[in-house]
View 1 (spheres, rainbow, N blue to C red):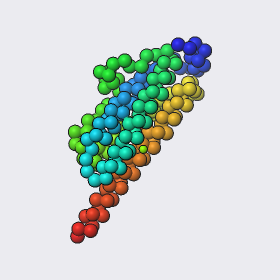
View 2 (cartoon, rainbow, N blue to C red):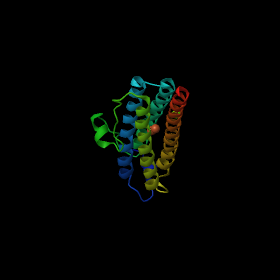
View 3 (cartoon, helix red, strand yellow):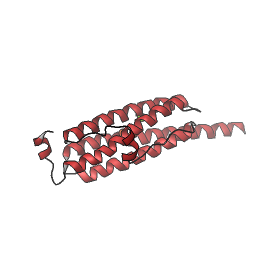
View 4 (spheres, rainbow, N blue to C red):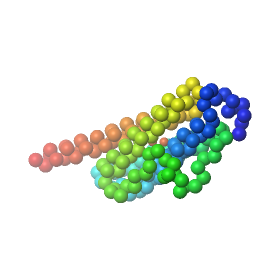
Length: 171
Ligand code: FE
Ligand code: FE
Ligand code: MG
């Protein structure tokens, strides 16, 4: 634990921040696995476009887990050590893709991103002007989550439109 680095926190305990970050850390691992497995099982229209997006997001969530773990360690905390704690500590939980239909998978993923946006937005509110390093790190992650939601929603809308066009041409 680096003492001077921690001493620059203003009006917030390192432990408060590491608790918030550890919950987000669990979210990231669950999001990573959800994207990983969705990409394997997804079926339906434009599934190749969906797979490309899901794989890219999986890589981003794993990178986020790395970033968050690094900050927890800097603050003298310990990232959650056991996968069994991921679900119990997470904010956003886990949605197994039991229905592999591409639209259902995208709906679940969009819901997950919306949760992540709320979680990180809340951490920004709590750390603003108190823990500038966490604030900066979380801002970067939040920008990715906003992009994730937009990418998934755009793809979802495209598939919907595609289906509507097909239906129109049948009649
Ligand atoms: Fe993430
Ligand atoms: Fe994300
Ligand atoms: Mg993307």
